[in-house]
Length: 479
Ligand code: PMP
Image (cartoon, rainbow, N blue to C red; front, side):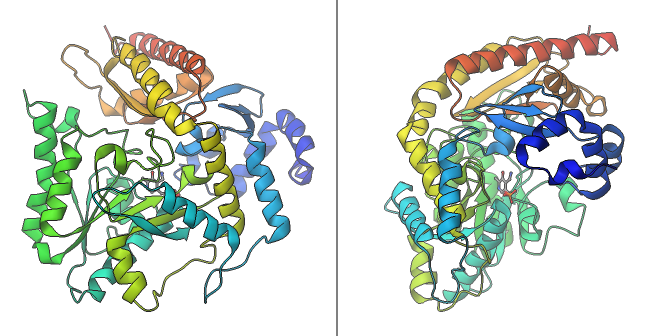
């Protein structure tokens, strides 16, 4: 097999890949174990080879231009091709490509980024975030959270407070603790998960869990009170923390009713347990705020971040540590026996600083909050009238559509039909990346997307929905 294309300089690789997709697919299948991929399927159908990108578009090795409505994997907030970020990485690599931050050592970009994040994190209800712990991913950050909250309660002389409550269908990562905190049954089924002392309550998904005739507001309160019931059944003195995404992302963009978060806050405060807001998707402008807890009136003690902090250009994650935890852990805790080689990696931190500077300069967060976010919601609302769409919701720059068999009764399709995957295939064929979670079609576009590009995306979505209807009619699944 011709492997020379893999060691050629980038420009040549780009040209060669266009000619040699099959060779790359064969090597890919032979050597690369992909995340969340069925390798039997990969071997027969081959991977889509993405070769380059610009702004909100990516290109594959056959030179198809595709509008990336998922920002890579919810992360390329600043859009593709941002020279400022590449320059920041280059400069930092030439100055100090790596040094560890263990054992009383630090580096300038890590200090500057921690300072910047502390300034960006809004103070709510007198709670402040003056400290940051760095990792390289969302999963590592949530593993850090598990160790940090247990250490916190140990230091307070309450070592029996071990249980962390999460929600079904949540996504908190793929490491042992991350996947355990997550509420994905398919993940729990592989690797003996969840690990002990992690338990789950139901998610606040109005469509699936509301009672007949129940208002969204009432449902939000009832869903929040599942947490109270769970805490009481375990015993409040055994519960360490509650972790949740402000808007559930990978679970299918589940946006809670407005009554949900204030009631959750009341319940965690009543029992004195810690609140962890997992904002790996929701922070850095995704919902029109630097941090999403501000939007929902949450007062978390710890905030997980990753993805958008560097717009995905280089791996970086971390935990914003609120005063309540910091005062115990940082001020009185002695050595915290935890850390990663790449905690505070200077290149990743330099790219994050450049990314935040770029987002500030282009006013991206406010643009999503006040202009393009509301416009996206308006255009998504129109899709509700499409014959295949049962519900359509948007929040900032995440949005979801539920595909239904019968619009009037909101009857769902047989899951075995894979209607979401069918729709997703039409999206690829029509030059659009949308993600399917069951029969929910979801998006999280780059924050640089303009109103005209939103129109372009919505037109493409409509075309793909129409194509899905045609295919379903052809196989006799729609009247
Ligand atoms: N938390 C949330 C809310 C996420 O969406 C993700 C990733 N999609 C993670 C944690 C895990 O992040 P990573 O893949 O960087 O480990």
